[in-house]
Image (cartoon, rainbow, N blue to C red):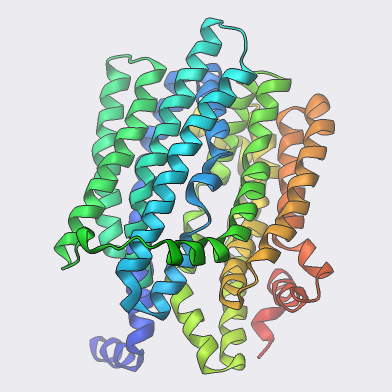
Length: 443
């Protein structure tokens, strides 16, 4: 048996072996976080209760809407450039870091101003919300150091990012448990979130230096910064509309119904999105190989893309179908009777994962083809659908209406809108084959 395993492993190409190992590290990271998240996250949710938990998530949603401005859509652009030409490492990382740092500082100031505008009355609840938003928004500045993670991803060396992220996550999870035991206020958990981002950044810097690299060697050039922005601006717009239909539901729920409804809805969303690390981990690992496949041949290129879409759809079905029938039992078991209203919301929202997975996979194609502007166009339609449906459905159905709007928005943005553009119709067909499972039988 051991000989068979050895013989099989020898048949695997070094590139595939590296991808499998990289994916394994990403899975390890998320499994650790998922395990602790179920324990500590659920503990925090129960401890805070629907109203305070809702206030916290309302603040997260407000800040989340600004994240695309802070990130500048540079993630895949930087990874792509580094995968194609690692020799430009210092110029790429230095220019991208400078762009992210400046944009995150501007975003911090803007989001603090916005929260004061939408909470004009200085009630205790509004003051707490303002402070929460300010603290959480400060974390976006620290996340500028995520640029180091892009280097590790481009070199298929996710283990270093995993070490840094898991170290910070485990340590701060212990801190959060202590906060619960001493009955700490809500604000303490927001500070802990920012502290976790800071620890992760420190870990990335240390491991980057440990691998023989030097941050002081980074170069910031105006010319290269302009080139990055020229490629990334469509992804900035895409990121904005993505965050709108991913987070506007919680903002509108808070404004139209109340913070308790946000807490109930957020509890369902936490479960629904718990497995999203799986498609992200797979795509992060195979993205460099898809970029390289483009250089080999169109046949190999689209074959790998179809395989990726096939895997995404099967994963989504394997999660969504069981949870659809077990949502009441799952919610009650995890959160208790105070969150029972989250069950029907989970039943609907869980199907968002199918289109999220296909959308994450599609981004590899759009980025490789240099068609990032279509990412913005196709997701803009989804954002409009989400806002309109939220406006009409939340008033009548509350959180359930928000979940219906989110599924419809993801359907349009990640899949349906692709049928209306000649340039994206080909990939729409590949996605359709994956959704219908016919892709498993195509060659």
